[in-house]
Length: 622
Image (tube, rainbow, N blue to C red; front, side):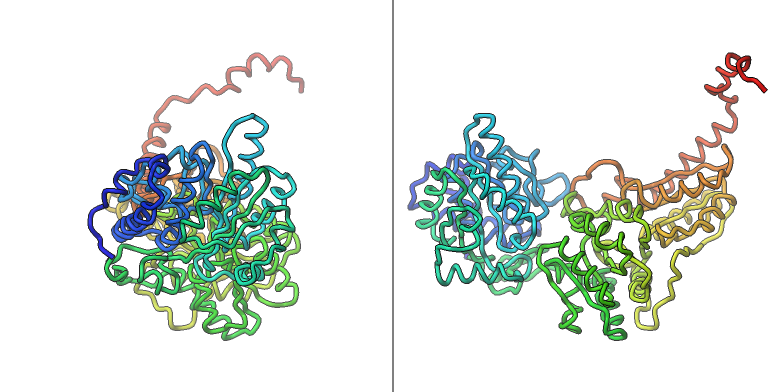
């Protein structure tokens, strides 16, 4: 496989219309050039490679048969849409994918007319496509609705809700089932076995026909001579059609075909060998620390179990499974089921740890409320990827877990400041049997240099800690922003400002004595959290408001993630952009202090009550 500049055929493809004008005999050559360009690009940028390699021919066939963008082509998740971007006018910008200011790693409505529906989370495409089809029939608009969904995404309940409704509605929606026997890791569950049976037996009666679909397949997804006529027949159908396409993730690139994960997500690599240029970590990742601590807890207690929703490697449950295979459960892309399954385990006295990314935990909120919190069940939630996640962008940012969980009665919600703190919190969660408990931690490496071998520190539920004493300003941090807070305190001390720094550790139960103690001893209190407003800072404000500290004595500032979705960027730049790095905290203290000084020397404001008091006084009777 050569890695020369983009060949002439691909460079002439500026839109799908150019694919439609090609001679059919040229399509395999185009597929080869697309693979070559894809490997070369992702070897420089990193990103999702294996899924896009597997759908090169399928992408060509879809754009050749369907009149995109008049026909709405919706990609589930979007991991596999890199080739789609290349043939829809974005080839020249592919070197920017997942980079600051560049293309998104997923489909995005405001990026191209060829991206009619944004993606990032799985299993949304069928429901969205049905919505497009229903709207077009009601409005009398032309164009078909077609979606591409992987077999892994079929493990999520939303996919079946969409299939059930689409089969009943009878609308002309086309579902392309891209069956590659993989998601990020091999799919699990009975549906995966059913798809294998269909491929082996070709039975006309199956799950999809029972739901009301005209089932076509299985078809070799790398054979354009099969793909194009099958899609043409599906486009001509009057009702719902499901085309079962069998592909191979990583197809056409030997290093991907040989890799266990088919090179699903990669950092920059050598395109000749597929070897990734991974920097040597200076500290263990938070995910690794969680996994190892969970193994420790399970070694000590046979009731500890680990649950993941198709993210075994991403959450560290694969490491747990290696140590305790009978106590590790991968339920597929099914976060709702994962939470209620954990609730059932808890009812029987087990100690379930439900390890889910913050952004994916959103999908199971009703189950958290109804099946766990309402029954006060001791389910442990290990919330990975809390806060910003860099190149994965806003679809994967873990911004809302504190606000979601902090309002639920009986929940314990905590956040470690570093990897040693995380290890301690895993053990504290294992010991906690009085209702649900959650701990959140970011993506990436810890701070390093910490002892993770001895007995873990003891974590007292609902108690924070003061790490630095000062007289003027208090910085109260939650989670891993603590180190930025300490750096900010050093800078402020150099400017003559005496600073206390405290680690709250808990959003709920919040250490009210800690909050009020800081509030009463300082003229300015700043809270810091890498989460959306409505979580930790809001809880601290409520405590201070109930204590009625007195107007004018204390100035409070809450630093949190802004009320907007931030585009993908590198994590350090994102922290700077939202003012949650050390310099941002220093700036917030300076600004609040300057405003406080101005207020101290300003004449008393004439309040609304002062203006109206003379008029209402005669009406007041003793």
